[in-house]
Image (cartoon, rainbow over all chains, first blue to last red; front, side):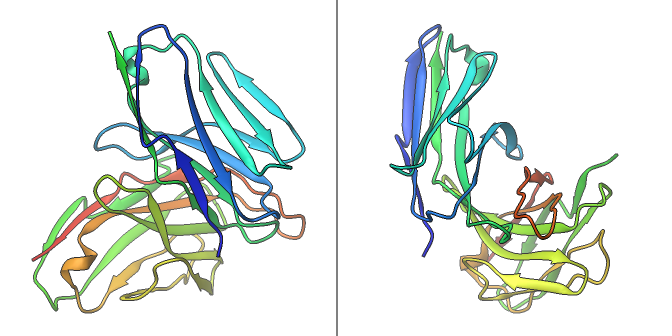
Length: 113
Length: 117
């Protein structure tokens, strides 16, 4: 069945450094890839997304890249700050018209001051 | 807009009891979803709906039922609660454009923390 693998499961970086989280998806028909940030005890919130017709998207310190051939996409956070500490989830749609999303298992990011 | 509203926020059930988790959204979204999140884990899709009167199973539907009688409401029913159903349950909604496969972001509710003992 459809599957999304996410690595690493935990990531610690020094404040100001960059963080990269990688996801691989299995369904070649997936065309939409959102990233969510979840703070402790809170709901997941969208931070950035990318569609399959785009290779890269950037929003201030956050960027996402997509490699359709290899079926993987990555989240890049530059100039990390303590408030970036959270769990980050990638997700992939299961194909056009299905409107389902499969989530990765999450990455716990710790930004050390 | 209130967005996606879930009730209750917390609940403790005894094994074998039943309950309904309520979810309502005021964004006129046609797609709605139920996910569960076990401690330290990702989100697993239980059921979803693409419109009133239409529901379908997700990855982990066993032990749950849903209905969608209106665009706004998407309740999740647990019939015979088991300890394995201890989890945080998130309802979500999204705007969907039928016919062209356009996906859009999920908007999540604040979750219901359920403990079955």
